[in-house]
Image (tube, rainbow, N blue to C red; front, side, top):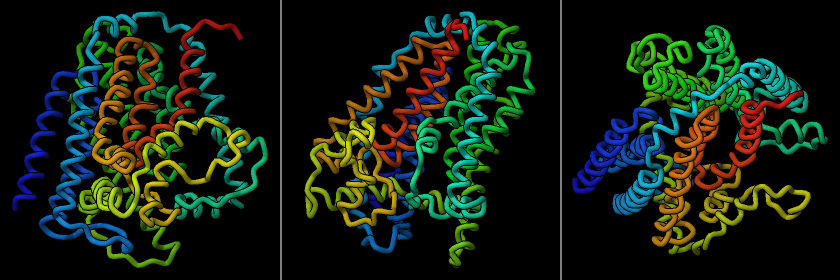
Length: 448
């Protein structure tokens, strides 16, 4: 009973904190980094904790021993303290400078208007060519579907030529998404609400489906909703109806609520259909339960931080920063860093506890910090707070079309970091570089 009360108090505390951020940041509302952290924490840690403590229905792999209530509570407390410190640093670092942000949207976007269609065609075409090459290398469409949707966490290593490596290295889909978000934001200014408000986003959804990850689809749809909220916010504050829309608008309309609801439905049902396909292809028979209950009971982050605190510092030595250092070396190509392993980063944490290499269980940001330094890992809450806080500060100061980095980089990072911690952040290193160069090219008057 005491354990349930403790978790309930933490849920209430984080919910109130999230509500304060939501009400004070109309520019970001529930897309704010802090709000994201709180929502993911409640779904991935706090609610599963109440289910596990009260009903013992712990959704963990068969090779793991069940977690005790004491282990759950200690891990939740460490997790909560970590995020409280991190959130406070984010809020202090990312102080508002609303006037500078609004002024950045009054600059000329003539270069973007001239180049957007051309860049969309080129980058979208390159993505399709890369996808075709990937399908051919897999041995055909049927085999590609099987590999991509059934054994996606255990990819088959293939010999690749230089062209294939280039196509896989360049983040064509992320770049296409960025241009899609910009077109969606400026669809009224460009007098193309159908093209940029419907046609191009449909291609973005189709491209996201090819990844086989429902998070890719969900983050893309959230990105569109973020850009629409931002358009409304700027339109209302600048009162430039010819630029961003007509009349005074609000995000709290039935159509936007319906869009958000449909994004969640797509997220849930895509996972359900994918699981049904996997079960059929692998000839597995599983008892299906409510998809919503399954998500709320999954508790990947809770499982990660709890098992890490069970083992590290006990029967497994602390890593002393190894995962952070290894991932900082991620940008170094393999032809230079010849001993670069196939699996590293947070994989070192899970394999250190005896997990199979082919699995990718969650570790969470606090979990990785503990695996490296124990309770001293709370210091990394300050580091992460500064990283995300300075990112927000950049968006608020730079503004302009660079705001597209928020839905194309920061929103996906929040999902991957919640699962893979620093490894998830560094996996977006090269996409961020390419997207930043693309935006710089779109925003400057170069002659081709």
